[in-house]
Figure 1 (cartoon, one colour):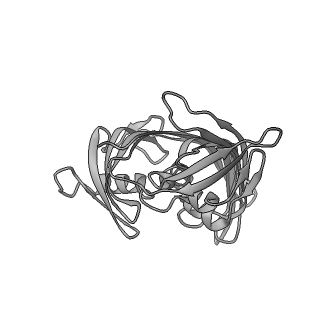
Figure 2 (cartoon, helix red, strand yellow):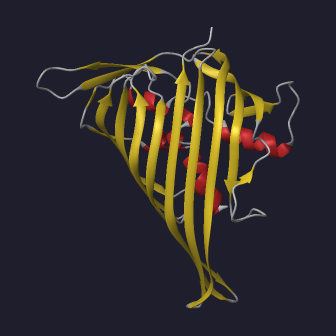
Figure 3 (cartoon, one colour):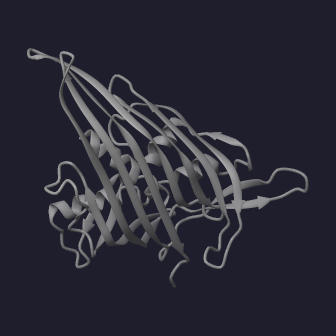
Length: 301
């Protein structure tokens, strides 16, 4: 369960920001740092995005009993997914229905029947319809039929945050940000941005520093703000997880949507269980690599 939590929190980074649009107006004063100001606009039918997700987590686990090593092993968890999401219905500026196509969806976990391989998931090569009813995500096939339970679960997991408020907009709208400025992210925004589910320790620090504004190109009509990101999670009474991630997050200046995330860092956990058979200590440590890219298209009319 703990290993799956690592992948869950990592893969949810970009989904929360998809289709909840904002706009940024950059301004430069000669001799002074560049300043950008964010404003928000609603999602629209026809908005679509192609997302590529790659997560790689290598862990070494060790179990000791009364001071003696009882078990030690190395595991690798990977997730690769390429999906296209198109908004088909909106309400109050947010996506409430969408069509999702999973070109690639593969996972490697220690619990798999082939723990050394990336295993193709049953949603690969298929398309689905999703609708949001409050916090509930409903998944059907294109003909409206309910898919098999495993497929429905995998699709809902991937699309959990589509249509929810854009956490970047919540953080940055109506707030001028200067290149080089550090922005501390509130804990409630951390929760929605990273998609944490269940206890994950205490978010000790999450900060963004605007490094630069990259100009628009023929392939990418919006300028992009590149933020240096640092996340630190410490253990607490509910969770033994310790996570430290650093890297970059790129955000469209005209939409406030994440276009790229590259983060890496150590993850560790340690717990002790006292039983009649002795004292057992479980520890695990490794490195998490996260890479996500989102390519947005203009509305289809």
